[in-house]
Image 1 (tube, rainbow, N blue to C red):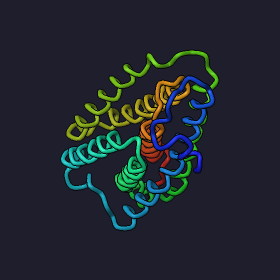
Image 2 (cartoon, one colour; image 1 turned 120 degrees about the vertical axis):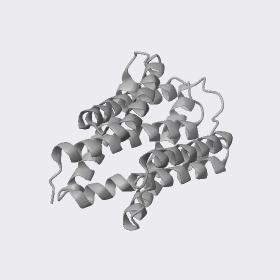
Image 3 (cartoon, one colour; image 1 turned 180 degrees about the vertical axis):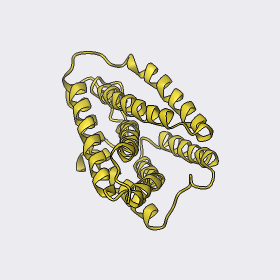
Image 4 (cartoon, rainbow, N blue to C red; image 1 turned 90 degrees about the horizontal axis):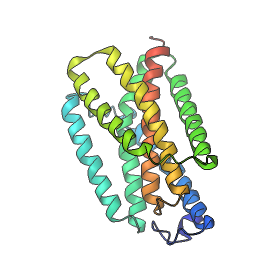
Length: 233
């Protein structure tokens, strides 16, 4: 973790050399690993105290979630070159852990193999990340052009998810989960390669992007595993 301070917080200066690009990537991976700690703590506290902001009104809960999330995004962006940016990022990951607790709690309480499903989702997410990060590192292809299409896919997923709050179509829900896993897996590829190619010079913002990719892969994979492989008590 000492590497995080080698070039100061956030902005790492010129990216004209491979050494500096590699340092940004190492800092990003280190901060990404650290960000998992408050996520786990937030999820554990959420399960322990039964926190579920989506339980009463899913649509209202979604609006509140988006407002808080974009508030964090704005604050992190404004402080991305300072130590406060790191603290805000860790605070955001704690919040995301709490938001995840509803799914984690449901999995543990509804399926006799809930703990196994969580571990499978974790292992699957780690494998996807390793594969995509490796491809981004060794491939000579430029995947940056995928970004705009993937963002369109994310917007469509949000619309479909909101519509399904009222439609309650199991087939649509499964489709959204599978597409979300595919889209955010591809985003890992794009976001990691952007760092490698020098397109992202700030490791705090790079960590935020990759964290969101990993988070969405994990939550959708866990939900999908619960549907297809969960054993009801």
